[in-house]
Length: 121
Image 1 (spheres, rainbow, N blue to C red):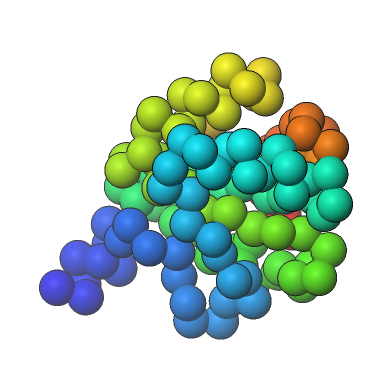
Image 2 (spheres, rainbow, N blue to C red):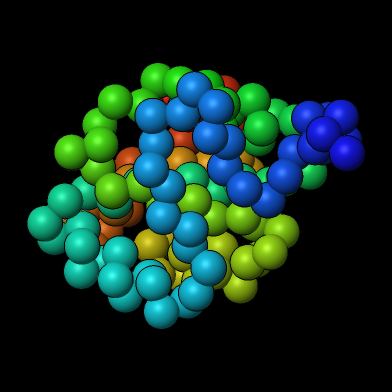
């Protein structure tokens, strides 16, 4: 079973060597929370496809580099489980869907986004 998880990934963010305390993004209502929180502290949303090796590599790289715990609130979105939330992100923040993708929200607006190998902490 772990061989398959290593090859195809899992729906959970990694925990080994991770500096990130992810908040799972699993409900559309959380987008309102994100908008509100982003007025105090920027919010990062990592959109991840658990079936994509590129997404898995970008996630691991981001997690190993992340050292902004006190400066950014990180949310993790499993695209396969919550495509409706990803679609709503496109509508609310005007960011074209990519996978993997990192979106930074500040003052209720997307101020930065990156995808694939451009994702960096």
